[in-house]
Amino acid sequence: MTIYSANHFNSIIKNSLLDYESNHGVGVDAYFNEKQYHPMADGKYLQTLAVLKSTQLISMSHFQQRSFDACARIAKNVLKSSEGITWGLGFSWRNLSDKEPYLITSAIVSRGLLDCHYQGLASELLGNILRLAGAGLRTWVRELSIPVNDEHIALPAYSPNIREPIYNAAVYALGTLKLIDASEGVLPSSTDRLDVMEWIRLRRIAGLGWPYSPYSPLVDLLHQCYILNSLADVFGTQSVEKECAEMLGQFAGPCCFADAIRLVMNKDELSNNHNIPWLRSLGDFQLEILPKPARLWSLGELLVLLSRLGMEGVHSEAWVRQARQVAEMIISRLSAEDDVEALYPRHVMHAVHGLASYLALLRKRVRKNTIKET
Image 1 (cartoon, one colour):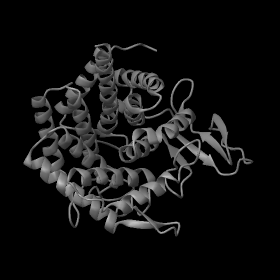
Image 2 (cartoon, rainbow, N blue to C red):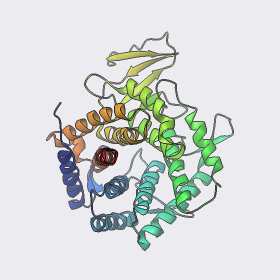
Image 3 (cartoon, one colour):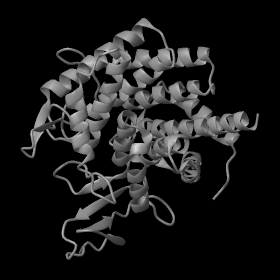
């Protein structure tokens, strides 16, 4: 594998952002082949800008102007809820309206706005959108939550017309809402949200991770990273270190990361699917390693997770080594002329957020070592 310098990482990030900005966030998608605007991509774009600003990789003036532009795009594409605003895909999916709001999209956009607020982006537009985004998430949790398994726990639904309790979307939204509450000085009125997050935390399959929902056998890499990053936000990075190590070991392969794993519930029932190249045993389960390498956005969110572990984890050196490998995989993917995912704004902005997090990790480590030497 090619060894890249920090300057090369910085160059890829810069060029990717410039391409994204020149297209005003417009592009095709894995689920929609016509060019259009994607709110989720701008949510990740804002998260990326906040990371770059946090380690002085961009100036305050550049940070402000680029963030203002994204906020203006986001504001033009809101979907109104009863007491706030939300965001959708902007295109029809599962035969639903292109105006259907989605919890994960709304949470990612809200988190991008919040991250920029934390980095000192002071504008009336940002303040208004963030306030209404928080109200939209609170309304969603209050009005669109559904009971699960008769355990007196209710999870926010994936969308108004997809009334399913999807773990990753619920945790991302609840964790983001907890951070918004803290930024607004709201006292712990969100104890019930923490209880729900703790309940989801305990739904983890030991040695692996979380299925897509209480009723699904699919375990997806992108969604593991959404969940673990959100739990780290609320409960601390070191609280998820063991879970990250176990998850990584299951998805890692000799050449790449798998994108998804399917659980076969009875360990005595080996899979008869001839398209599955790898089977692993895990307690009472057989794991089908699906024959699909990790998507670009999965690698990006994984790199965000590994980078924070490299800075805050107990075993930081091991995580830095893992992060480097994933960062180089992403560079290779973004540099390839025939990688179709490099055309998808949502995928690319996840990847660039990962690279920015990794570059921030490298800069912080240099600074930390310099302080030690002096």
